[in-house]
Image (cartoon, rainbow, N blue to C red; front, top):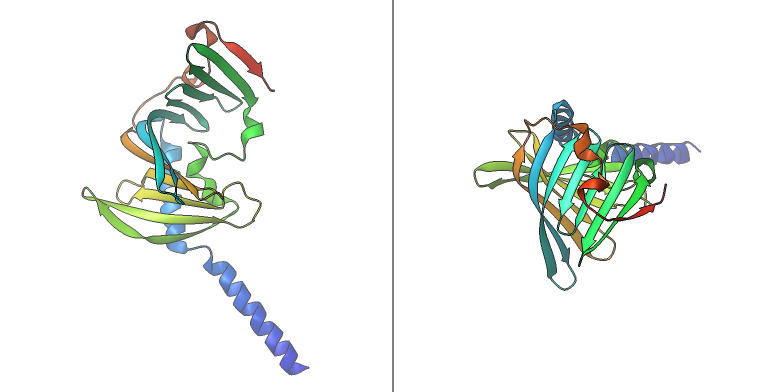
Length: 217
């Protein structure tokens, strides 16, 4: 009986140790620093490159875009598409071949999505994380951190974040889907000293002419 108890106690200790090991202290320190700096900013505006790559056949597609972020608000611009999020409402505007439409959702209905603002705090709930290492890019030390979902039902099972070690800025991230694809975002130019009016994050139909409105709220 004592042997069985000792064996169970040992297993309990080992699994407990593995559980704690899934939260890498070095990675948390970096992520906390990046998150705290982001929260202290009045606003952030950046140009970026977005790439989708299919790892199974080496195909990839790239686009350039612009992003403005302020707290939980953001305005994302891509070719033929803009997304406005003022913290309460999300407008997805699409223009193609002269056709214009905007779809409206409640921001709370899209909480499971990884957004330009939530990427700074995604690690705080539902993910394990570890520091994969550091590398130099054009004289800058980039720290690579891998996040893995604690639950198999999480919308994103694996995410990589890339941080500037000295500036504590997020310079890019990668999202891996379950189809062998990866979405890559890389900031090109970043302005972290900009004040953005709240109206910048709200869709104004008067600026876009005749637009079909699809309200899903």
